[in-house]
Length: 165
Image (cartoon, rainbow, N blue to C red; front, side, top):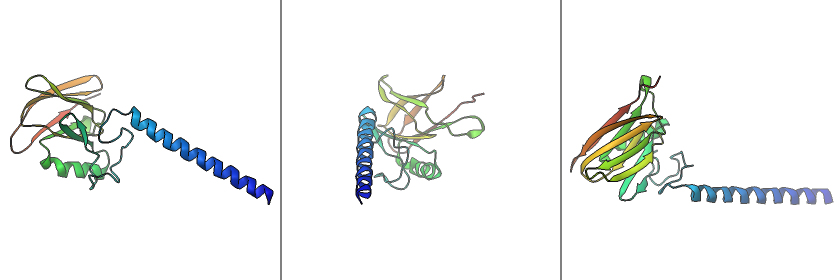
């Protein structure tokens, strides 16, 4: 009887310690993240406010963006949402394989940086004001630059392809 009571106390203490460490780890991950509107540890779309498989929308200044598309649900959701975002970017490699971890910088006509981030998958959707922009996309040590014009109504798309061997 006394042994069972001691075992219950040990189990309860272990559960409390695990919960405390888990909560502290989550707080640390949020504090260490420089991402606004989501966390760098949230690679899933499940349970987010966007619904329908769309990853978390993030914000840098007055620019909103979302990236991902590694999973089938995210990929379909991002492709379907393209018409609602002024700028759509796609990143692929050899044999049309999808790429993630592409460094993306968007610079306006006045050479001011409006977005500087890393894509979480092959698709990135960006809400920027109409105008002319230059998109710099870097995968590993290779950078590509493309000019895009965002119309007052409608969308612009740009695809980046790396032939890495």
